[in-house]
Image 1 (tube, helix red, strand yellow):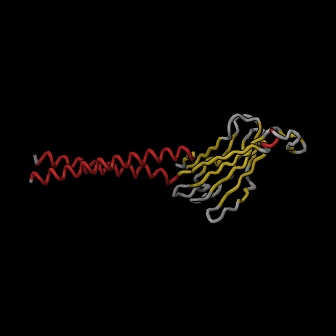
Image 2 (cartoon, helix red, strand yellow):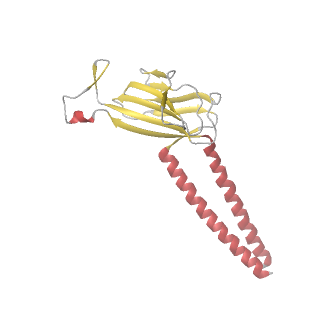
Image 3 (cartoon, helix red, strand yellow):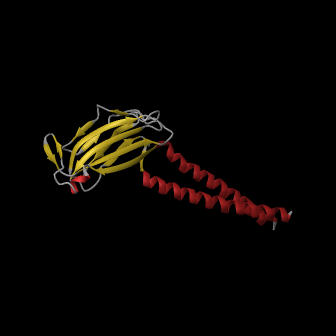
Length: 204
């Protein structure tokens, strides 16, 4: 009886230890995470009602266009440096027309946008690339893109040592799953530990 109770207690302790290791191992992934948030807005939606309204670009009429605001924020604990970066933040359209694009940086200390003049925009290739730059924790790289006739929003990529791009919606789902699994594992481990301890004390 004492042996089985002791085994149950040890097993519960092992479960708690395993939970702790796995939980904090998953949390380590956040050290190098870039959170990607995208907003889009139709330019001049009133033209559907007022057909005499319109936009021009370089003097030519502009077809219905969309403004994309893509914010890439360093939410990890590590700073993204130019040395870490093989290929910097790049936004690409799969189809349609890339009309205009700007890239900026937002500091954690204020909300002012610093336009990065050395960003490379290739309108014919439907691609805009930020320069290799320092992105501290809490700082963001911001893409402002005007596109027309595209069927998909721009896709953002980054190739840097151990850094991972995570969409906001995916991050929320992963966090929810991790939290639920953590709570359930901890609860059952504690119950097993208490049960095993009581049985062990009763057998003594």
